[in-house]
Amino acid sequence: MAAIPNLNTLRIGRGGPRRRGGRGGIGSSSDGEPSERDSETARDRVVQQTDHDASSSRMSAIELDYLDDVYAKQLWTPNEKVPKRYPIINRGTYVRTKAIDKLVTLFLQAQPTQRKQIVSLGAGSDTRFFRFWVQGLLKDAGVTYHELDFEANVNQKRHSVRSSSVLSEHIKQAEKAGTSYNLHAIDLRDLTAKSPPPIPGLEPDLPTLILSECCLCYLPPDIASSVIQYFTMNMQSALAIAVYEPIRPFDAFGKTMVSNLASRGIHLQTLKRYSSLEAQRQRMRLAGLKTCQGARDVYELWESTAWVGDEERQRIEGLEWLDEIEEWQLLASHYCVAWGWTGDIFSEAWAALDGGQSTAESKHDDVTINSSTRRAFRDWLDPHGSSSLTISQETSNGIDKQLYMEQLRSSSRLLRISVNPSTRGIRTQNSRHALGYGATKPIP
Image (cartoon, rainbow, N blue to C red; front, top):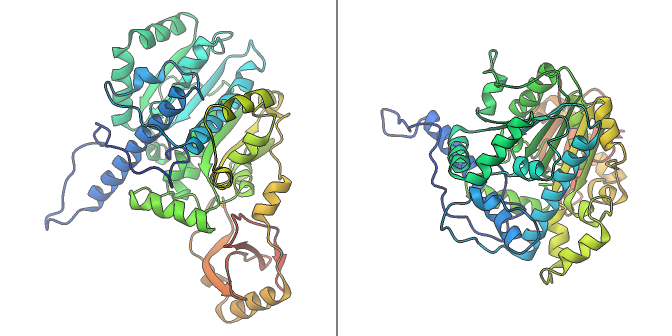
């Protein structure tokens, strides 16, 4: 389980099936109809196979010199042709990879003599451990590196690593230097159980960075929050989380993106809850990562010299002719990198990164509520009451106190609304733009 196909939901058709199994055999109900377990297993297989999409996009970017990664081929299916992605897909893959790499690099460079730990959720065929080992970033003080994924994906990767003399040798050399690489066949949902399975080798006392690249978004929101809570409750040192996920599902582009993925059996279950950059920051705060939070969409990352230098941007622009500038801007604005942390080592590493609300974000995500709209909301709320607005809500732990209503027509404009029952305040999203949540406005 690794990724939505790298900004690839609108332009590329579904890839060929990965030669991987699910989490076990498929049973069937006595009347011949698919059982609930059948359906869950089928959904798991679809999610597992998204790693092939991510790997294909990574290989396309590597073949065209967007990325320098000599290890991806070691994990690529032998004799399988590398598909050529569209230029905007290759550029998106580049930005996503470089942004996560930057967060990891800054963490590893902070307090060089301090041992550290990285946990990659749904890592799939990711090669970051091998790339960073060769660059020397894992050698100074020793790093404990964990990858968690479905058993089928882990078995496939373990086989590929063992079959590669290059990768196997890197692991041996890393172990001699005090750096460990750990592959764990763990269903993340099991971490939310009352008695979760142990993660062998996980060291609670080490500063730890959790990575999730289009992984948690496949889980129900409550489960995704509980997975994060597993680490916030069990890790006793500095902790940070970095995620790469889609956002802004409510405009025309976002709806098409969601629809295209759904046609492949892929459902982004957290997308509506964490639909904007500010919602992603709030997610980090509510998870207990209160020192600081940041978020940027992929287009902002591409335009920022703090993330992509001018010379490097010119190099990338020279690789392929990109005549779909507006499409690139639209596509890139629907994916984001978000991060949050607690602990001095991450403050040292990431404090200089500006992840607060930007002017561009405000234009995307804020809507001013005019008087006619306020009257429409008030008239709608009076006969119905706020309790009838509940569609999805985090319970007991109070992770998200917003109540959501799916659609309401007002002043001939389709709006997305969330209501805060304690203040009877409202937030809106205009369907014509890629919007998240704007500032709360009181109902008169």
